[in-house]
Length: 465
Image (cartoon, rainbow, N blue to C red; front, top):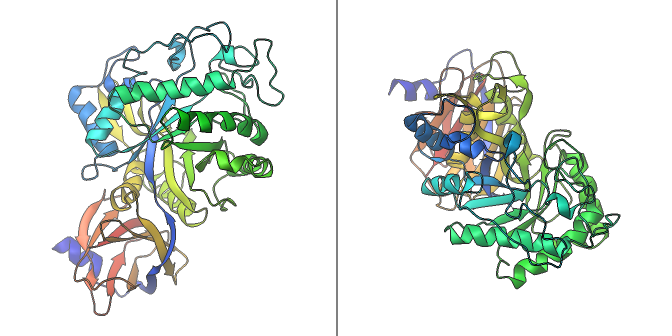
């Protein structure tokens, strides 16, 4: 009761504000929020990769709950699995389902399947138990023998695309068959892969699995993959395009795809946020996903808001909301959910048998828990520039309003809700330096309105049902 009054009661020093929500004005449909455990990170959670000591069983369960459970944790609803291309798992590489070349693109392939897929089959089943239904399988590269540089790392191009000549021939159909076989293996394990991509950051060449492609070369492969999926009974799997390191870089790929008629061969467009953040919408009618981003340079921190560093929780809450509101993203994925790391690349740090959760995860929780797949973003406007807001009409009939107070003062705020059914209760959830999704309630008025005090440098979710 005390906490509820703390949220609802105005104080003399606070400034009055207005947020207006209009459910009748709809924008993009939301697909969800997620993370990846590629490159043996799934096995780190499982406790079967690295020098040890390994994570304890109790902490393994906590990690899984914190990532995927919509009541105990962030409620992430998308798992991005890596499709392996390497002959072995040296240096955390992802093992290919066809590690040895068949000799030519026309020779019958010899696939190898252990039912594990670098720990990702186990992780997918655990995520499914906690409500995940969207599985995005993404290849960082084709196997090396299908590429111009004959290795799965250091870039190179897929044999058969424009400017991708190889003496061994055109491997586009073989790679399409490879991806289809991956889907078949997962289906045999009882897991439905819903989305698939054949590239990761095709604008850079790096020392791990990577494959270069511009928009024209992307189209060259997608025009083979797309009909292959439909022919093999996987026409319901959504095909990705883009996936470059930043918004501008992915935009260049999109321009090439449009100019060459390639838009017919993919279902959603993707980008990462590293080199260029999502500050503008892409000119496409397809859903847009931000599929990988993280603070890779900062040291590990659990802070919400202390020094204004890029890795702090409030910074990432703002990044997610801006990507949705400004760039019309339907999904937002962090790079790694949990790993053994001293950087901010994961949301949860595994340290031997111990674990530590960052405030970034609780920022994600406001979106993952209260903006469920199938929700529509609706109009939400604030009279105060430091109160960044967005609103969502969920498929279950509930309405969620998210507010980040970036100011250094508490903000007494009146909410006017238009076009929604009458309501008598608003549940609130608070995250800041002192709270991790702490429940409370707002003061409900008449005619579709309520009032709450939003503490400085905080995020609050308001759920109307």
